Length: 319
Ligand SMILES: C[S@@+](CC[C@H](N)C(=O)[O-])C[C@H]1O[C@@H](n2cnc3c(N)ncnc32)[C@H](O)[C@@H]1O
Image 1 (cartoon, protein in one colour):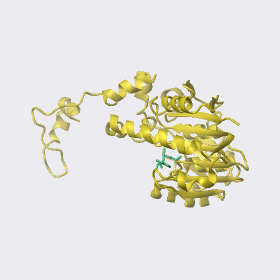
Image 2 (cartoon, helix red, strand yellow):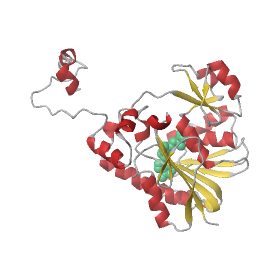
Image 3 (cartoon, protein in one colour):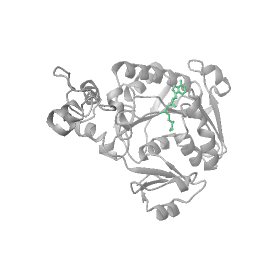
Image 4 (cartoon, helix red, strand yellow):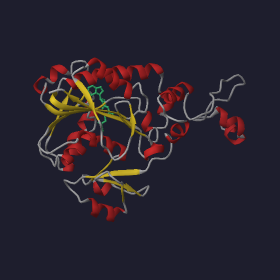
């Protein structure tokens, strides 16, 4: 804002110290270099193979994408009612005109970025399976898994955040989903609450806590809040949830690791370290409607794929 004020007298005049106004600008006030993000973060993204054009697109305006819930609605009818465009290769996704009011369609559609829908497909969820959604939050991906399973089987949805997890059950009810069991975990004591699932899950989905560099289109201020220390803490949490989740997978089963970040430290690098430490696991190539190869997985970004930014990998436990 100081940079803007330096070149725009009208903006500068608002720094007048009035009630709700910013303090007057002092002569020696340090000014941040202008740019899309802090320079350390731009350097980290560049080192992760994210080009300047891809970095700039991280703060573009996001489209309004929804997932049609096949348990309650038919994609073709919703597309014609809401003037939605199908998204090639993503079975239940529609892109709606900006500003479409979706409130009347609660339970029939879920607002969910196409990228989030695409990475959920990496679970290849089938009716009848037993799946753990370890970092389920409010259940965006849980509900996508349940729809893919045609509401047959069992999903254990867990999280350490009570408020987020409490939003899942009412959403599931509205969506006609009855196969989800929620379980609140104690941080660092997750394993003790999951002993009944050890070695039994067909798939464990880990949508890990992360810096969110791929979701700046929705949270543009997050780029200025992220610090190297916070990033290191996210990386530590990611290692931890990978270890917790891996224990739950049955022999021959899959672990799907997702982050909405483009930084290798949270994506390809995490998976590389996991595979180096777990010789009985291998990465399985992914066949998704979009994504560019990155390490053992795929990466999506707004400039290349028109979605939020994600990294996803599918890892298989030896039989
Ligand atoms: C990216 S968000 C999940 C979003 C959710 N999957 C969705 O699609 O709506 C990551 C979640 O991980 C949870 N989390 C963080 N540490 C965890 C842990 N040790 N065990 C389980 N969940 C954890 C956070 O509370 C947060 O809700």
